[in-house]
Length: 113
Image (cartoon, rainbow, N blue to C red; front, side):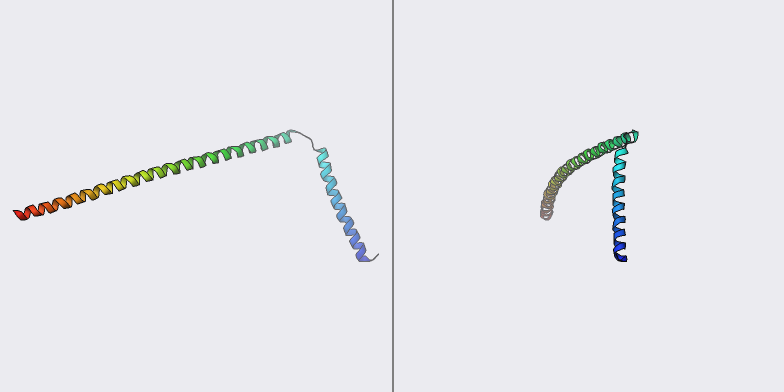
């Protein structure tokens, strides 16, 4: 057996031993794990976290619905204000035409005197 073969064999044996040790340790930890107050705390914490996530999702959905409602209302108000503006512009144009006609009538009456 050459030196390279020996080094490779030892390296493989050490890697195998490390993997086997890790696997056995994981198995040992699972076997001796006891249910206790710490597990109850973790379960309570995970339940509270799930409840908080559900509440967050519900609030996000409510906020989105409220935003959509406000956007609809804003569009209605904007349409109403635009309509009112066009009405006022039409009234102003009619008033200006009337004033122009009255000025012409005044001018013709002033000339006839």
